[in-house]
Image (cartoon, rainbow, N blue to C red; front, side, top):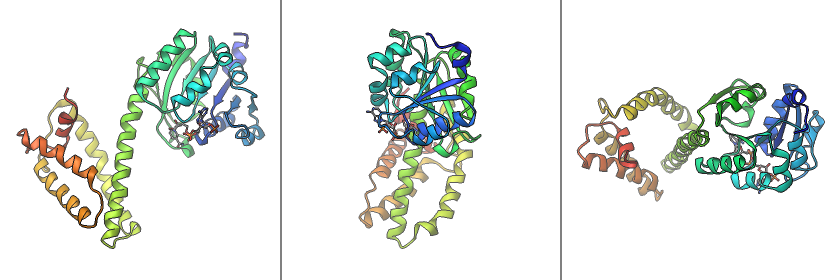
Length: 297
Ligand code: NDP
């Protein structure tokens, strides 16, 4: 690698300038790092270049400008298209890639194997907060892969603001957290969309429901703490809210939804899992017992 190490340490490359890639590059510029950017579709770097970024003519040229390259594109198919290209591979040898694109743990492991075979140092990561948080204390980044490599690049990563957590050497771990947390997010979001449709069918507007919906969301943080202990400890206390009571409440929602012609398939599935738990003789347990029927340990 010909780049002067001390200069390169204060430099960073960002490949992929969608909303998130632009936010990452913007935070690096705000922190005073020499920031080189590239995107498949030309022109997306205009504002960043006006702010002082170096707009590279190719991904290989961008990679050659820094010891550390962050990739942030839609998924690993896109990341592969960008990275697994002859001149880019040549430029990456001996340098570090942090892949912040979202995908599955298996894809992260596959990319790590590919990187190792080509002499490329590789870390995987996940961003858990939206673009306006980047560069602020509210940003949340998860990282996995070799700890020494993470420590080496941590000063540059810190320029993105927020919290950075190294989850261990298993390269798939950041994606595993990402998948589980997005499972929670999207299931909750789909649940809220469904709730709004049922409310509307009953003549209740989204605006009218919103403050009470926030109240329901506020119940969850302490329950998450309690349920985490239940699931790890295999205790599943149903004291105060046994699963028999939960299925009764779920049945009312299904009944009301279907009376309005609203598909209740998601809740029907969850209710079916809860009834299975009761059928197995655990009716006095709490709802989290369903984790046992969803995936047997
Ligand atoms: P997108 O997920 O829409 O990704 C857009 C980027 O992917 C653009 O740079 C686009 O290039 C590139 N891209 C798509 N297909 C290809 C391809 N075949 N080859 C090369 N590049 C390709 O937007 P975001 O920037 O928001 O997200 C980037 C990543 O960050 C995603 O994995 C997302 O899940 C994650 N993320 C985003 C958050 C957000 O709030 N936006 C929050 C947390 C994570 P082009 O301009 O040429 O189309």
